[in-house]
Length: 389
Image (cartoon, rainbow, N blue to C red; front, side, top):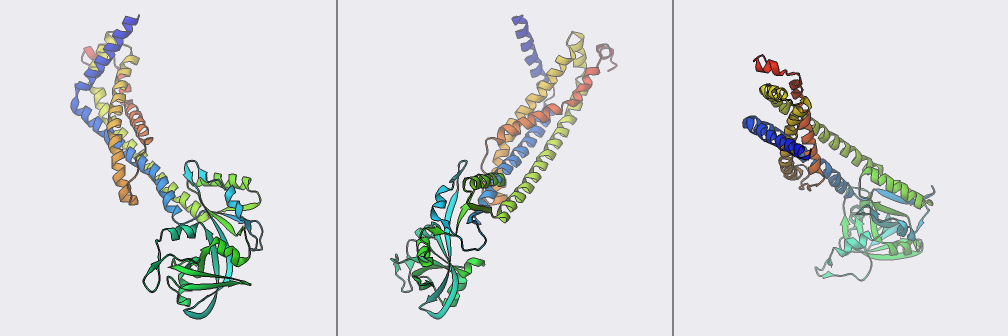
């Protein structure tokens, strides 16, 4: 019994080798079609997966996407500074950036101008500290770089112009009976509300507002997909029931819409490519079915069942799909690197999950494309031998 199975298996693979050598030109055409389809499929799938990471990175460059605010509607409520310590700092393997802020209405003046302006001073930590640490020193008007001993601040472009302030200018801030002095580390001109604000150290803002240990809000930059961000927000709200966790909708919803459109377009393109690949292979398989009628008639005449005969041709199609998928998917991964650089300006990262998916889809298309071979089931050996087939 075991010897019979081994003989049948050996005969099976011998016939498969003969089938591959029957018409090498048509074999090459089918292999080329399957390889090209696999290459385009792998490239588009890799771009689709990489687009999620790329969009997330690009949207995070706009700033925080979630705010933690005190509950209440008067606008004067604050949070304990320890709130930031309760924020989970990881979403999966990605890091969540958190910044504490305190808003103070202060009167600002400069030695360069006799004007007094009422402006919003934003005490931020660790954002301002991180910005200053990237600067080796401040260049004062005399041209000598120095590391300031007193607090520094980022001045909005609108305030700087009205007070004639520049880098290194000393500014005086007053709120109630509290006073603070800072050196302008630079002028921020963004075209937004930041142009009419000052950004100072959080401790200086707390002294100025006479609110030690208090903050106005916590800004979070949460990486991940919109679904992951919403899950993180829901978990954070359950963990901190005494605060208001609010997403910045235009970021999360905008990211979701753009990704859904890109993903839908790439998925539709992959579907069209696989359909066209299947039609090309199916046309070749139709000719194969016509050419092998005599072979099938002979196999049936010597006792071969139709199930075994069709299994031979399906194995041939699957092997063609596997060979085309392995070669084409590898080429498609490298193709996506160039396409990513052309579309996003940065080369796409190869994703290992894309390779087996593209190969599996190619094998599936090759097997489905063997549908014309079902016509071989109706062949009668007697008709073949009489020359009627």
